[in-house]
Image (cartoon, rainbow, N blue to C red):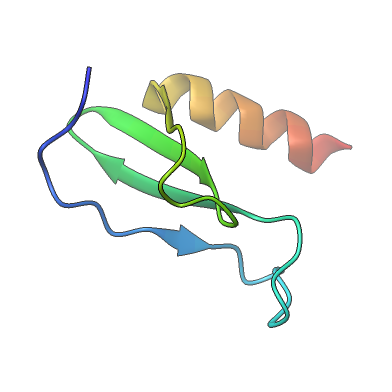
Length: 62
């Protein structure tokens, strides 16, 4: 399902200024949207806020 709402994308403050392997994240309409910063016109992954919170928690534990 495509979203028609404008999304405010952001990158982690840990991302370097030269680009590289980064993701961008935006929130909206009960979902967290994730995309590849090098392919902003490419596919977007939509996950529930709970799933995103769990993923971030797992990543922080590593």
